Image (cartoon, rainbow, N blue to C red; front, side, top):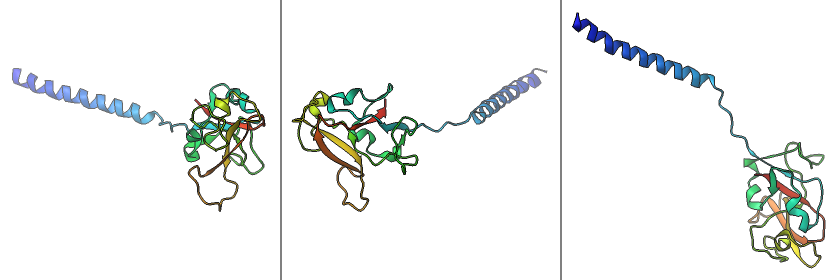
Length: 165
């Protein structure tokens, strides 16, 4: 009698393990796998001078550095937020906007350097970097491609590129 009882115990334990694994598998398979949401970015509809660029984005967003939005294939343009053009579709418009450089506070006329003294100047003698997607698709590539960049005096009004935090 003792021999029969000892054989039943491992079989019972094995049965419990199998049932437990089946239960876990069923729960795992029934939970839908959510795709990772892409980071959203947009171009403001309102144009501002350089010294107002840092506060132009909606809550939850901040003024984007070019390198945060450089690869648009990893991002989602937020068409519900604001600015689009007639042929934007679900992508960004072909327009220029103030963009952060990641540089020291400078007023240089070189794209990638000028940032309206870290976006504190609205003076016509200081310059900030602006960026937009390339207009002419046949242009030679640059380090910032597909973005075209330039600088403008900080007293001029431009839209602002914003990215979700």
